[in-house]
Image (cartoon, rainbow, N blue to C red; front, top):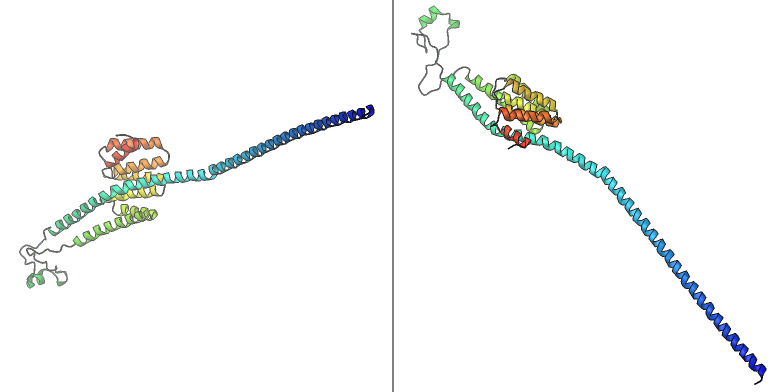
Length: 303
């Protein structure tokens, strides 16, 4: 082989080696750039995903806050209003229940006393002595005496002779019985109206009862029911005035303690808590053994 050819071959080998080195360097550099590009893209995508996640979390938080605000503005307000209404109704029903419970026990006693009073009145009228004319036959007076002493038009009617074992009808007993029955009927009518919730009608009829039978044993109860009906209508000032009238007109009545308790309830509804407390203390001081006083102690937290 000639020196020229050998030199040419060596040059070619060197050239090929350089070319391979350059090619390897090129591919290596491209690979590094590609790897670097892939890392940057991944970071960008991760950052974008984090941004989207944070935005989603912010959106969810904003929606939850909005829902909570709506619940506070609507649901809770309605709930609070409903609770306040229930508290007012509970106070009213509690007062009515206290009154009705006491009235049931008292009604039976008053009814028994009323019938005993009716029976005693009738017995007094039936056993009253009948006036008769001395020396004259009460059944058939002599014709000569009737003709000479009195004109025929004004001769007194014959009087029945009392017979043992037979009741003699006494004029006026039926009227007394009818009056007592009418009194009880008027009271029961007004009380039925109250039980049905017809408070204006009950107030009107109980007021008429008090005016018509002011000395009836049922008059204090009628006046009390007037105040209780006013309380049920939430006219608390009128309820207080009605109960004060009971205390003034019937100071010895057994309804006075209940009237004071009803007054305290009305004062509490008017937010006069200090005055209501004084009324309860007055009730306890004046009527310590009454059921109303026991309820007053419970309200005051006393034993």
